[in-house]
Length: 51
Image (cartoon, rainbow, N blue to C red; front, side, top):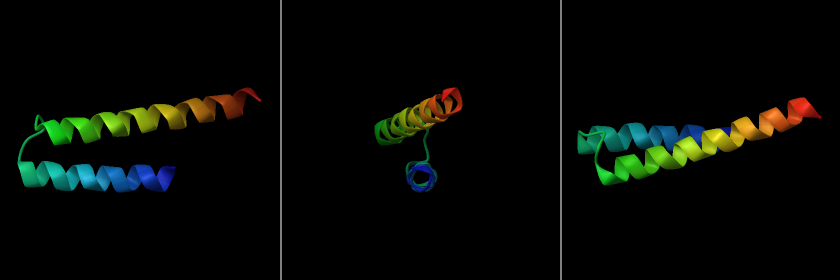
């Protein structure tokens, strides 16, 4: 999951550079996907701590 996040972040950096904008719909969509993945990782870590 961590590597997937890192790949997505690199895609985001490239996309922002290509589009020259943080508000391009594709940039926003990818950013939101990254946010959801980060939340999933955080939830898993919290569950592991509780056990």
